[in-house]
Length: 427
Ligand SMILES: *Cc1c(COP(=O)(O)O)cnc(C)c1O
Image 1 (tube, protein in one colour):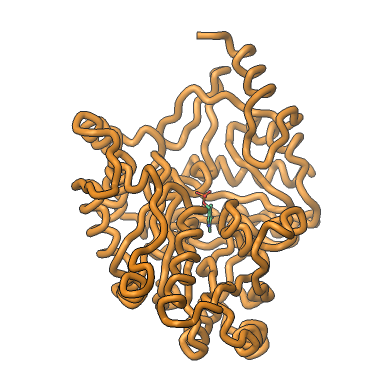
Image 2: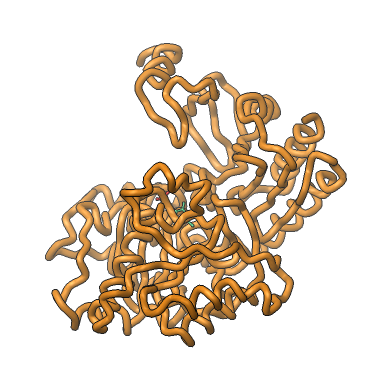
């Protein structure tokens, strides 16, 4: 193997990292292996993972049961096309997904990533209205500070400013944006809170296909937790105004907020739902778009009689096996108790941040802890400080946040929150 310095030079010269310039001064760390909640760097250091590799690694790294299931699946087949062919991992995963998601959802479309699952959801909504004889319904209502992915359709429903819509102005569909819900999680909503959505729905004159939202937690667009009441009323308003509801559970799905799916906080059933990220326990890239019977039957009975999408790696058997095993592990575990315990640890551990003048808000929901600062964090200096402290925490903008694997033990969780308190205090 080449020496580390050489490898890192190739990385710096020739590989793009997410939202990072090639010649960036931001440090990039070479990971040798990972186990449980620990990332092992090539220089021998070990970091406690506070990110679950962006919400996904809920059972920790190198999970023995998922490893074993994948090794076994590998012996029968790594991949086979899904056009005209099928396999047990996809079928069993579908059975499992339909059993744990809201009952009205009864068909699954597999794709490779959360962004594509959102594209698929948006296309489903448009095709649905087309089949219903309302082809003018092609717009989407979305919330400011939303994040739904990086491809064009998904990007068009992301926050216009953080999504930099002006860069792509002529290439991207223009959607209808409304204010982010101001009512916090745990609070009720006022008429005033609902007014922007109500107005958008009243003013849509039949051009809107669906409202798309991240239920309860707006993730990458600002880590904001909003009232379940808002979600409940949004569902009612959509039904009243004959607009579909797409819930993007890509970040919130599989227990992170304390419910298996965040829509359960409001007892709300979407017409279309997206899942991804934690779906495979962070092993492989897989996402799914679930739809109600009304949606898929209408599409299939309309013109051209099929849903117009079909990824090459649709329902990859290895990915489906990882997902099926991950969900089984989750359901067999005491995940609610784990999330409650993590929530408590985050609340206690981050409490001292509330006293700091550089902090504007501290909020915790389920396995998510957020410290919002008054000023953006300088990642170039802060990330190395976290690494120095033995933890993997990657802030963005004014947000320093944690969403550790569900298996994290109390002492490791405390090391994460202590590091945040210490490093923010010194800012
Ligand atoms: C991450 C995310 C996506 C995009 O998923 P990718 O797998 O990165 O394409 C979509 N929606 C939400 C809510 C997300 O958090």
